[in-house]
Length: 92
Image (cartoon, rainbow, N blue to C red; front, side, top):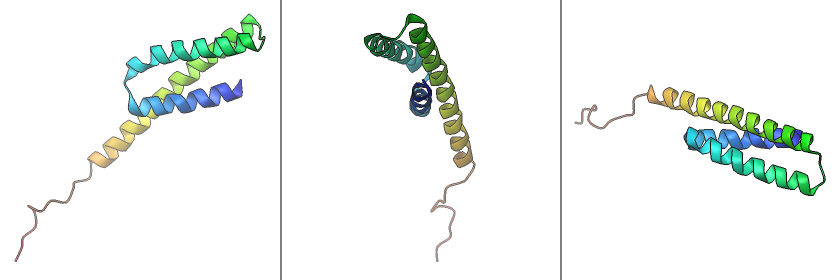
């Protein structure tokens, strides 16, 4: 279960840096269906499958939040620096 948590955090952070919030519901549904199918195929119990899907959804959202915040802080840090311009220099 810890592998599901770690991978969903990583996937969430990648999605948070690239997409808007609207990507989360389809990702949770698709990932939950895949986790449910694989867990059922392995013979896991219903309670275990539900817990795995809940952990996946929660960690995906947490990773998304962290990725979006990281991107926002990096963007504001770079936005504060003025780019050098050829117009501001005096030549000759």
